Image (cartoon, rainbow, N blue to C red; front, side, top):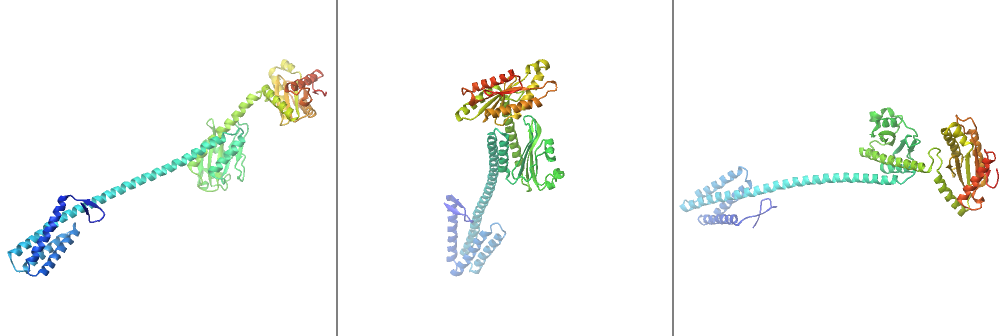
Length: 485
């Protein structure tokens, strides 16, 4: 059976025994009321009196936990006694009055007991509801915390994803200038184009010159290390400041950081020593966070690692292609290059010339002054030739003291002029303190279009023949194949 409690919003299921008990009590009340009704002289007045007493009884049910219930109970008894004394005395009326009073007290106590139980159930329900609400609030707080952590983790994942992207972006280049330009663009994406970026790396190890790169929107490209840079490099630690005017660490650098309010700096570290910095400046206050500084530090490490890889690859290529002493390309590189250029010249009918140089009296230098002095002579002449030929040309150490210069897009006469200018320059400027004699070279020149058969090997042979003709006819001269001096 369903029974609604006083609050009206909870349903309780009662067993049969309490239900029967309540039914019998209610029936007993009506029977006693009928007795009282038929045994009194004034029926209507008695009924009204009975109803008044009954109303007082039910009113008392609404004050279960207050002292007023005893007051209402006392009034009910007094009214019954008054009814008894008002009417003519009889044993029957006495018995009915006692029965009625007993009925009121017994029924009231039973109903109070049940109502108290109902209220206790309601209180328990409210307590459970409060506990449920508390548990739900706790769960909601935990869910919110998890969401915040998830959001923070997602942001970190995005950061690391961008670092992974940066790793691939920066690893694609073979030229460090292009790589640094992409590095600046990555900083623009992360910190905004309105911030000013500086990359400064000093000459060290594989880095043969100081590197200075700044963002394009920088009003002043600082192509030198300043006091802040040296301070960071000395401390070897990243630094952040979001209010330079109130930061005592930067108080002495106001002249360097004019109109700058926020700054983050990450050192460029090589072998536990700072050799440069990456600096980002902003005119806004509180423009950076510790996460920004951490990201810049990671990205700087990636950039410098790629820079080292590029320079190491370049150095490896140079060691593979160039002679370690003279800096000239090696013989194998010459053979590959002349074969390629000969095919290109034959296919597209372009000019291709070859100059073969040989140092005069080189054996005498080795015998009289030693091989170390001979190496100095070879190195000095190689340097003059490398710096004296066009950019499109290449100089190679052919063997021993012979140097081959391959000239693309160059005819026989022009090649002979270049050879002659180099011969004169070597005679006039090449000097070694240990050697008092004049250092000279002989040269033979040949053009691809002038030789009988269009092959790279014949071009080498013709230039070599012109060289030996120059050496056999007095040295210190330039001979053209098929055309004399």
